[in-house]
Length: 360
Image (tube, rainbow, N blue to C red; front, side, top):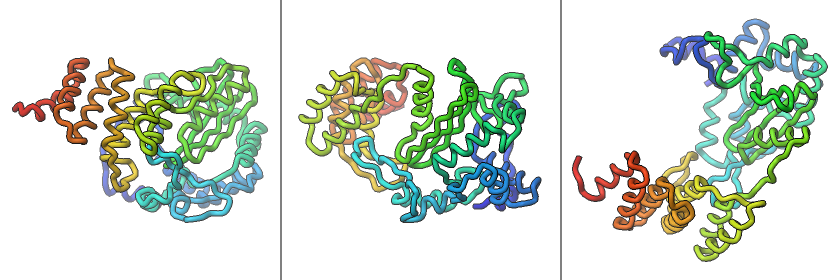
């Protein structure tokens, strides 16, 4: 689908409004598609020409080019392009190129809209863009100030995302006024974070993780003499990789050793749970052939129960792994423990009824 298909499609398939204009607010890529159509209507030139004439040339951004998402994800090799990468499972050691995954390629192949995520750039060029905003090459100061104020709803309150005109505004202003825009796709994230009070900017790209904004914020904190916790490594990820490749004994020994080093490593109940489901392998967001490692799933979730014995959810997950591994009687015990800890665990009660042969 393209921009030219959008409005005819909306008209032909009219849907009721999700909410009345001004009652609520939410960020949606489709709004930038509409903005691109408005730009073309008002200016009388194409979206691409408008961007080049009014942004790229004035800011001297020579390394920024139009490169639509279908092309980004459907070319095998591109010169000077950092491909997005994905860790398919928590236990994986190395990421894979996003465009090596058939589902990802097919998804973006049909996503040929203009207006969002269709330009690629460099840190150097975004620094030039930032400079052109500060020296008012691109916009007047009063226009920028308007952009950096959250849009009000009909009730007079700020919209829930604290979004202005293309910029999100941080609620915490202890370091100064912070405005930013983040972006992400399958296998990449990016962020431009501007402290317009102190004239500071952090620009960050990451082509394998989804935490560019989080890390950009930490850099901004360092620039303003704020304390930042030392980044820590995931014990669950290390444990899962060792469990799969070297076995349960070495995995558990490593986990116990790393738990003592709280300065450099962290242990998360949720990550261990996710790891267990990764090993079960019944579904994945990338529609790849399923890989089932039931023994590793049972071992992981058994370990999680031992680590977090007061969590009803870990017993529920452990029971599911046991059931997949054919250990029905032990699964029943774990579901019973989960329901005991959380009487509102309706799914657990439903599964128990089926396992115990009870009728509704």
